Length: 146
Image (tube, rainbow, N blue to C red; front, top):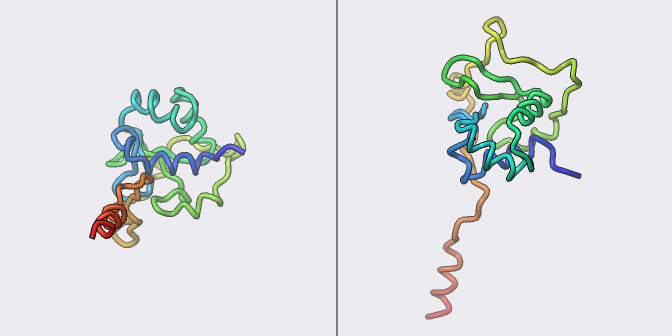
């Protein structure tokens, strides 16, 4: 079975190689594509096996993400169960039937103020998915030399 969108997107947002083209907003409650060309040519093939940005956006909408249309988070996407450092919530996310798919948030249906929310309920910082060189190898080598 192929990985579902929340897992792939979570991995993508935790990939340090992609931070220049797609990343979490500072509060960790929405994410944004900063460089669409780089995202489509590099990130999409790596995680989704294609380069079609429009197809990716349709998939994101199909999973119930909403696009923010104004303010500091403009053009970022959010979902109440898709939060930085809380991948345990992804299992509760489902792909929506066509009739329930939402359009971008309008002025009447305002986006939450994630910066205000973050003051009271901060999320974990991003933890990158690569394994840095650990001190254990260096320490073990030194111990072997003594």
